[in-house]
Image (cartoon, rainbow, N blue to C red):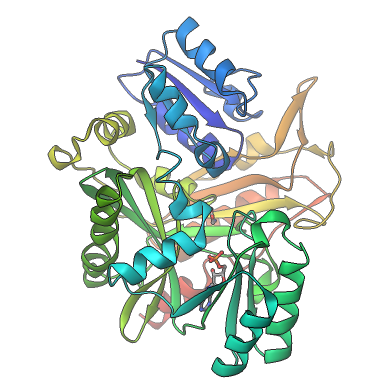
Length: 426
Ligand code: AMP
Ligand code: GLY
């Protein structure tokens, strides 16, 4: 099989690493890729936004499957365009990708199908949004409707902060994504990420994970794309996983099929585990980054047949096995991220870091120049490790982090703290 992977982050390095391990693989390309991906795939300088160029590459190279990593090409309809050209692609159509690209679409779908989520209202102007806030009180959550790189959410602890967030969004603080605003109930509980592989009709539960969205230790600082993760999430007991499938994932697949927008690909449910059970915070229509990195470390079987089964509507004949050992990843980011940061700073010590037992390093924003690895983005490295416990995985990951010489980078030192605390309580 010839496979083309689209993307350039740590998620795509982990996917490339796992795909490269498949007995079915003949050749793997990645566009545009990064310095780490170049070790397991041939990187090609294709503009992923240029669908005609991607199609021409697939035809010229007899690509059997395109795997789409990030959400932007999915929301732009790359899977539809590839399908129209007769090329198989793993990921949802543009219509199905609305589960991520429009929060209002997802909220309406939940309401119409009794899928548990926070109570909400959608608004097109500030005055009506503020009246709803005044009637409901704080804490309350304000969200820009469209894609805002995971940053379009304000959890407001006071009415003043909520009103300020409404003004900021309608004044264009998140660009066009904020033309519509969702205001919703604040939910209390522990967050978890649940991943399911979907073929339009059937869903195969993958693994669970917990992300760390804030930039600094103790969940302080601004929201980021994710500063670290581990899998499994202890809060996701078998019972919670079963309820998530029955109450959230499967009703969503049925509703999407009824709309003529059957969902294929990875459905990533951001959940709040409340006293009443799992409630949906949001959907993403792709693997999480950095959650994918820990999922790939724990996936025992070959990923490639699973990707084909999802494309071909054959997941009901499929199962995947997982290593029981937990996996954890620490994100190393350029100083200043998620704000402004420098590019081009040198990173050393990656090879000695990778020698720590159980450690696997995935690269995100990196490039190679004259044999040196240089930082080339905000989130730059994913230092991952497996262990018998989360505490052991954590200790191994930080031992590797401490071998990496990158004075211009930083990371959180407390990734996994919730699970480690649970373990120490026994
Ligand atoms: P989202 O981009 O929708 O995942 O939201 C980002 C973060 O905001 C989530 O990970 C939660 O921590 C928080 N959040 C979003 N919606 C709610 C809600 N309704 N209640 C409480 N926290 C929320
Ligand atoms: N880590 C969260 C995300 O990928 O959206």
